[in-house]
Amino acid sequence: MRTLAAPLERRVGAAAAPRLYALVDQGTSGLGNIIAFALLGRALAVTEFGSVGMMIGLHYVIAGFHRSAAVLPFTTDHRADHDPRAAHAENSDWWWIALVLALALSAATALVGGAVALAARRWPECGWAVEPLLLTALISPAMLAWEFARRWLYKIDRADMVALCATAYFLVLALAAALAGHVGLGAPGGALAWVLASLAALALALPGLAPGHADRAGVRTLVRRHRAESSWLAATNLPYSVYSTASIVVVIGVLVGPVAAALFTAARTLTNPAMSIVSAIDSIDKPRAARAFAAEGLPGLARVVRRSRLTIAVATGLYLALVAVFAAPLVALVFHGQYDGSAANVRLLALGFFLFGLNLPSETLLIVRRAGRTMLAIRCVTAALTILGLWLGGRHGVAGMAIAFAVTQAINLLLLRAAEARHARETDA
Picture (cartoon, rainbow, N blue to C red):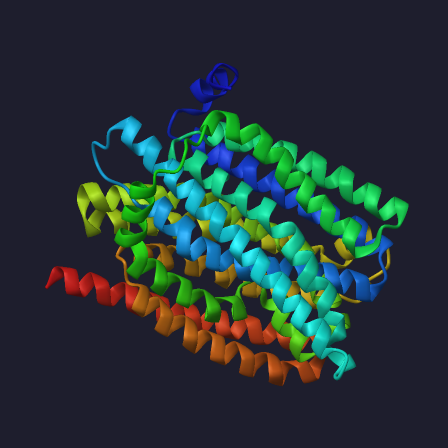
């Protein structure tokens, strides 16, 4: 892969190549998700499509815990002049920690699904949540394993391999979703599309990563070193799951029902590529922020954060502006008349997604500074406001909920910028 990518890297420059690969990564993954949701949205009944939307939302809830407890500490743990062999051994230990955690979270989700199934005998109205929970338990081990492998490749500066793996993910996801919709396999068939895509990407990534055997002493050392901060970050994920662009559909499903979840999923499908752009930038900038802080302290970290926010604002702003302008024909094209009338909802979500993207650079600063308590406080406030806003906005349909999401993201941005400024003042003092 290095040989194949060398001519491109010489043309665009060594510094720009990782961002280009990251855009390929998120672009192909995001496009694959759009195609999968479009195909399944056309083929499935509204309630089945709502189950798929809830499944993905629930997956991102447990993925948030996985990311907070394992992926973020792994990604931002950087030490200058670390011996390559020791670094690989440590990365391998992180791999096994992340894999065990992924299996545990998936098993816990399956148990919750079983408990809800039992409860549905007495309260039938909650029975619709059983299928999304069980499907989440099905897809999550493979998806979480691929996500960690992806972050590992970024950490060792192999963004070129990430782009290759993401392309395979895109192709398999689109083909599997088309097959599931054509054959009529329902929501379970749609879920398998994400499993097969993740396994295909993982099959390409693992030979290059070559994780070694877990070293018990090394695993214990990592757990002991990062336990406190991982616990704080994992705690922040619970309120974050309430308002995250990926998992907010779960709250909507609980408050309003599966039909509202389906409508929100349809509207979000067109705006969600903006989050793929944000994730592409974030995948490169989080390790860079950690390296800058280790080498230059807060000035270096602040420089990376400012550049990251500007890049996100320009890139997502352009995309979301185009989506807002052409919302009506895009809805008609993607869903073939299934969700006509959602154009106004798409425009409102575009604003909320833009504000959400601007929040992440501030969170990067707080994560690198190990300010988990501050993040927890801010996320709890934002989550409470989001629940209140969705409850009030739900009376006005998806449009009301989209407005509530945009307002709470604006408040969240103000709180994060205030925390960022406070950390800067404390360092100066």
